[in-house]
View 1 (cartoon, helix red, strand yellow):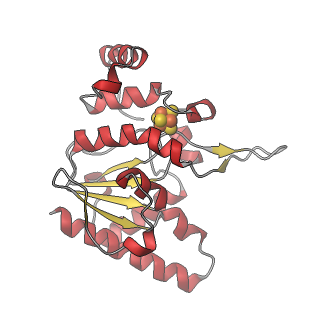
View 2 (view 1 turned 180 degrees about the vertical axis):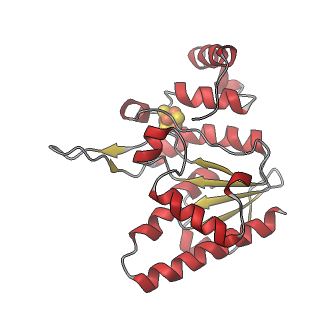
View 3 (view 1 turned 60 degrees about the horizontal axis):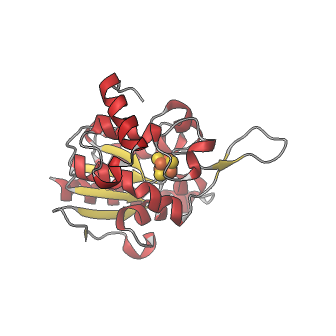
Length: 223
Ligand code: SF4
């Protein structure tokens, strides 16, 4: 993560985390949120990850994008969407006329869940379970309160679970604006990793076009 955390903020975050203060009164600034994610032990995923990966972007972005969890490269870099899926996201944003620097990008789960098959070194992605998404929703809610985006884009089913707090299938919910309170609306679309996994070229092109259309729809709602 490129943002520097001051010693005072870090100490306050350590105290608030240790004493459970944040259960009653969550972080009041993005800096505190970042420090808190690094210290978080709300579920067990911190044990196997390099670091917690908080969101990044303008403090008052109108558009917030929520992915599933950091991947292998994000876990090492400490930043969201910097690996292969991030490149698909960037391409989609560009086609939709959205500057990545104008949006706040985060994940439903902040630590990388993975497995390493015996004898291998590659860390293979594992989908976070509902309990982990629920535990980490505390941080996503904090980000939503601090950034106050007008539109939230849930990228994939896990992100939708984090955003809505309930299962919200992508296929049945694409293409519409869903009221999520606080004068914000949410849009559901594919996760960029899903587009990467499609092996049929025609299906991949079609899904990418739909992905771009969803991002453009969200951009229109955010102005
Ligand atoms: S995944 Fe989320 S809830 Fe779990 S330890 Fe990491 S930051 Fe905390």
